[in-house]
Image (cartoon, rainbow, N blue to C red):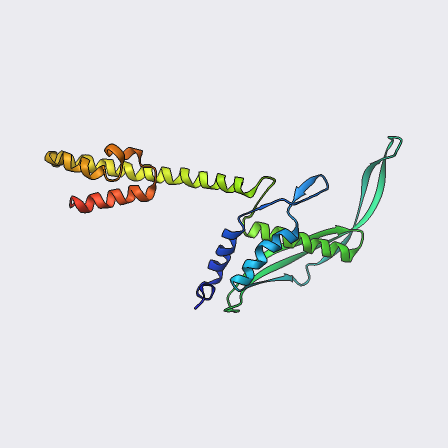
Length: 233
C-alpha cells in the first residue's frame, strides 16, 4: 500500500508543512515585498496531489456584508501641491471555512474557520480580491510558513542552529544524570574506576563525557553504562 494511503489526514498535513516551511518573497507592490499566490500554490498543491488531499473553501451562510467604503487619499500635483481625493470603494466581508479532505477517506476532514475581507471599486472585484488574500494567507498561516526576503537556505540554517542548541541542552541534562550515576557507582565500587574510564572513553575522547553535545549519544552512554555495570533504576 502506498505511504499516503497509510497516513491519517493530520499526518498528511504534517508532511506538507515539512516540505513548505519557508518560501522566499517573490513579488513587490505597494511599497513592500510579498509571496504571490502562484508561488504558494505551486509549492503546496504538488504535495496535496502526492498525499491525496483536497482543500475546499466555503462561505458561512448569512455572514456576507457589502458596504460602501469612502475615504480620502492624499495626492500631489506636478507642481508639488498636496490635495485630498475622495475615493468611493466597496468593502466586502464574510465568515468562511477552509476544509481539508482526505481523498483516500473523504469522511476524514479538518474544518478551519477563517475570514474574508476585500476592498475594491466594484463589489465582485472586492469579493475576488478577498478570496485571493484569504487563500494566500490561510495557506501561509496554517502551515506556519516563514516568508523571507533572504535565500530560504539562510532561514533553514537558523532552524538547524536552534535545533542543535536545543539538542545540546537535552544532552547536558542527560550527562548531568550520568555524572550522578557514575559518582554513586564509584563511591560504592572504587576498584572499578579504571573500568569506568575505559568504558566512557568509547563514547567521549579521553573519557570527558561533559564534552558530549548530542542527546542521542548521551542517552546511549547512560543506558549502556547501566546495563554494563548492572545498575538498576
